Amino acid sequence: MMNSADALLEAWSETRHRRGGDPAVFTTSGEVSRTFDEIDAEAELLKRTDLAHFPSGTVIGIQIGNHPSWPALLLACLSRELVVLPLDAASGPQEHAVALAVCHAAGLVAERCGQIEITEMAAPPVDWNQQPPVLLKLTSGTTAAPRAIRFRSEQLLADCTQICDTMGLTGRDLNFGVVPVSHSYGFSNLLTPLLARGVALVLTQDRMPRAVLHDLAQTNATVFAGMPVFYQAFGGLEEVPPLPNLRLCISAGAPLPLPIAHSFRQNFGRPIHSFYGSSECGGICYDRDALLIEEGFVGQPMRDVHLELLDAGSAASRVRVQSAAAGDGYFPDSDDANLGGGFFMPDDLLAPDSGGFRIVGRVSDVINVAGRKVHPAEVEAALLAIEGVRAAVVFGRPSALRNEEVAACVVVESGLREVELLEFLRDRLSGWQVPRHIYFLDEMPVTARGKISRRALAERFQAR
Image (cartoon, rainbow, N blue to C red; front, side):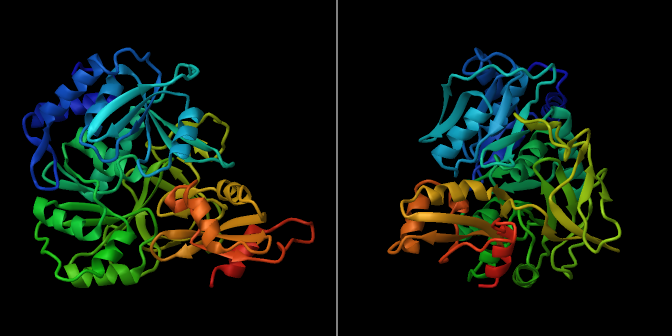
């Protein structure tokens, strides 16, 4: 592929020069799916054919799950100066349609029956004001509509560098990729280390715990980037295979419950390292020692990441993250004081101690379900679309495995049952957006000012 001033393409050029014919992407059976040279050739073909007619600055949605063509597609888009919009393959069609429209996507790369297909779509041109991004990461806005975070290659490369240097990932490692590449966690821990550092990768679309363990053993992967729900499931399996080559286990997406970490360490002889990050700025903290003593502990700041406590006198505080990996701002609404200029302020509340930081809560109503953000307004709108539902309030409740789970309170006409509401919602929302519990009230409680308090309802029902 032709060299470019793009930071990721320059890093890829060096990687390819070093690794060339070495295996880059493996199947779960241990077979080589792509070498580094083959990724480059695939990217060049995509650049000259399927992507050739898209003007620079065009947004291209990519919805292919953990397909082995991901590295080549990203490289081809970088070379053509196209803007990549990763889409979760598990999301529903309505959610995809809204995201594509909001981000003005003019093309969609999708996987059908194992084949990659590219569809053109009508979209208004985007004026990037001489500062086009290379990647848009979807996140929730202050309304039900999604918005995206703008990234340049320099920021993506900085995140990759911070992750690899902090966690000790090298070209001798083999990453196991079950976390979706379309997710910020998967993109930064799996895809960019492959391109910029030559960290080979196993890609799988099978998320069944037994299959994941079997494939970890079969491929001799050395690094597993997972989430608490995987580690919890592993602990409940019998006759598990030995994992002699697995040297590093990482958990992100939700705080890691200590009982799960202790059980995994007892059964497999390995600690789990908690990783705390955000779509807006990449990695924030990492538990390097994994002593597994304090609940919610996420360790120390990543290398070259600096945290400033905004309320240093309190037991828990929001923080301002300073990082070269922080995005340039949101799209399409760019006016947000929480992100920009190399800084980001998450909604999480952190408590400092001598060994690092613990996550103790959140200041916003956005619900964090295993790293996926759910805005209550979207679920409330779906509930209110059901005939007979007169009022609905949605909130998050603590969950040991998923950080938070969605719950709802409703006021309905007589005769409606929870099973009917859930059936309706499952046809219209993604799985993680559907409430795990729905509570029926005679009327919604209000404050002295006549407003419904989502926080008060969450506190009332969180222990049930």
